[in-house]
Image 1 (cartoon, rainbow, N blue to C red):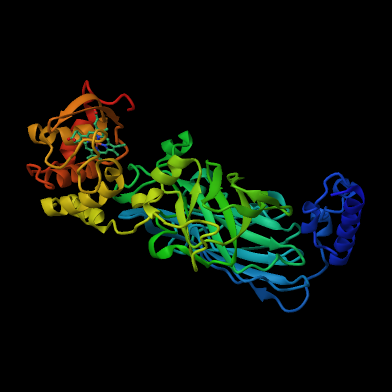
Image 2 (image 1 turned 135 degrees about the vertical axis):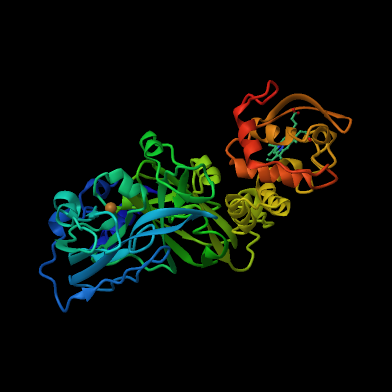
Length: 511
Ligand SMILES: [Cu+2]
């Protein structure tokens, strides 16, 4: 831009701002950062000092609360009201992964808890009701509250009791709420967090779809995907070594038939929180660029963002326009969390192909593998039979097949044929026929250096897969033994456990 045009643009931008009144978004959107405007305080909202719009007007309103991934409708109000929020604390057993149960402590019966939406200047009358069958007392600290403890000091609630406190929502923004009863970390680790949106007085720009996603880290006594009811592991929590890192409290909460949906041509806004208690999230949507991120849940937005950092106890809003149909994968880009601890969800966009923007040819499996599908029932069935002591070879084979597809097939191929000169075959393998116990050993400890399979030499590395549970190792081994001309037989969980303890000389060093 030439000098005069730029000057004109700045003047127009200022005029636009005056006309728009309190449209604060324009402030961060100023095209020319070297104009005086950018340094002035016009973009400020006044924070809490300007957030009191006077006494509540009209009749009290009952807040609409929604369970994730849904978001309540915009308040649509241009005046401050008294809003009554009634939130139930429910302790309940729910699946944390396929065939894995966990005793969650929840706000509203879900993890994360119910989404609350109010307007800046509203007076919120908060009722916290702890269900009579709860075992623990609980309270609530809302980060959108101005006052000691954010409500926690006024809301200690024993089982079967209700407490009430009132606050004025002085600051606009997207805020985390959580339980703050000792041991606080444990209450949060058990799922006690959610989001409250305090809309700015003019509301947020309308979009086509809004979704609520919240990350949390979980600490179970068993390994990742170890079946059955799992307890909370305080040691792992203190060491910050989560077994699961999840969106919306359960592996698969946003995959399979629970994917988020949108159409091409639509604008999508995500309200994303991080309950922690320990980890910071590098939130990313594979295949999308955030057109706008209201980073840290505040008032300003950044544009054209790939990955946004969401601190524990923090939140962000992000908006993007859908151009190309297909699966967009929500991840914590600390990738082991996504692919080995569960922090993965899917936004499915429908609509006609748009080959000018993307050539097409979608292969879900590239990123998602077995993480996307919910059809791991065979694994659950096998685990249940194992616990009752009547696990059949057939059940092991079925479970092993489902697991093989996500774990081994990338290299050895789904039909066990391997890849010439690179990955040895598992089909009709004389290496396996010679010593069937090689299977669980290679799976758990990897393999490195020269090996000859069916007359062909390989000299490569297979990384150990010791992240698998003993059940999983036993089932995959049994599946391979009973497939593609291999000699048959079975490997039990106890055998797998014994082999895990002994590291052979030719194991891969990556253990
Ligand atoms: Cu609690």
